[in-house]
Amino acid sequence: MKGNSCIYFPYKDPYLVSAQVFSVLAFSVSWVWFATTSLSFLTMALFQGLWFCRQEKISILFYTVLAIGSACLAIFTGTHILEEWEDSSFCIPFFMVNQNNDPNYSFNCNEQRFAYISFACGGLWILASLALMLFVCSGNYDVWEKKYNALAGDDSDSEIDASAPSARMTPSRDLIIKRQTMKKQPSVAAMMMATSIAMSNRSQERTVDTSATGGPIPVATPVQTAQPSYVGSERGRMDSYV
Figure (cartoon, rainbow, N blue to C red):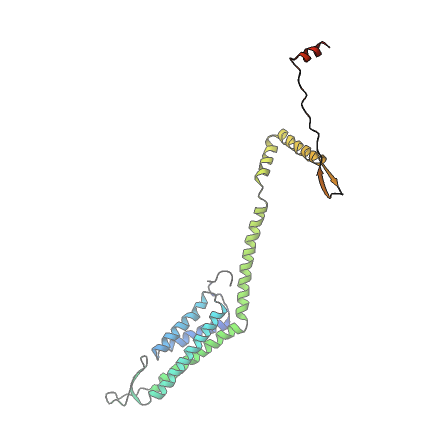
């Protein structure tokens, strides 16, 4: 995953939006049992986080598994209420407390109402998990991620292209000195150029390219010895008379 991961509403997809709406509705009717409410709140919070941050595909599939688990727990709660709370004279749904044929309570618990609410919660979680799975398996998730990765790649390439010419066009220190010398002292610059040309010509004359050896062979130059000076000597005075 490239680029910024925290973006408001990164996935503008109808499947994902439907899953998020179903998760909110499922949490609103998950109050029949506190365990169902806790798991539903956790799953719903993770679903809503997709409004603000991009997620990896494995994370979204994990949210789908949590939604299926919430649905199974809600269906189990409804089934348990229908079996255990039948003809109960007293019940507290959130804490799953009930009393059977207690003479102190004369009203009907109406356990079917709570069971149907739990079944509705489970059905909404199933719809949320299916919508989220369609978002991933239909390829819509990959389309959005390719778009964001391409944008992140273009930004990095533009930064590299913007910095590369400046590095290539930066003159060296020697080049700057030569330019300043040519501007301020043209005669010195001309002398430097003539010296460099003479040195290159001299180096070419001192090398001989032979095909027998396959490389340049340096040519020995004769050594000039200094002539003796006879100034002030007897031979020097004799030479002066000649």
